[in-house]
Image 1 (cartoon, rainbow, N blue to C red):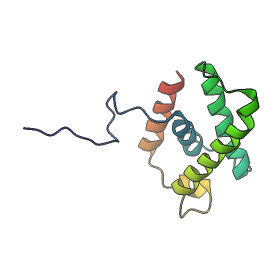
Image 2: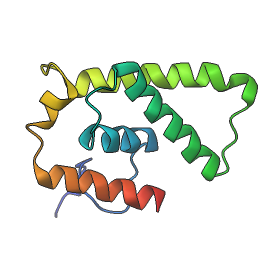
Image 3: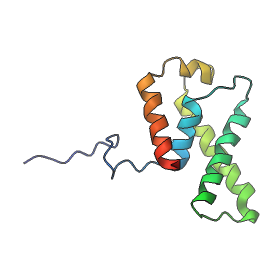
Length: 115
């Protein structure tokens, strides 16, 4: 009897449910272009796109809570960024070692999400 795979990285439709915030984060990270952008600008660009994504999906974010939610999301993105580029001095340094196949997979995942 063959055991079912519980590999979270498999790309079957059921396991391809990744947090949209992480998908947007990866898209920005792997396709980073602006070396003059500081960390805060980079993070809030991701948060802004995520909030726009939520609006496009008709998920309401009350105006009275938007600042607090943005701050919490920024902390989450900062944590993801710190973990992802650990050991690298900058995002550009991190990007040097990214395989082209990984960049392509990130771009495709992002396009499926927003498409």
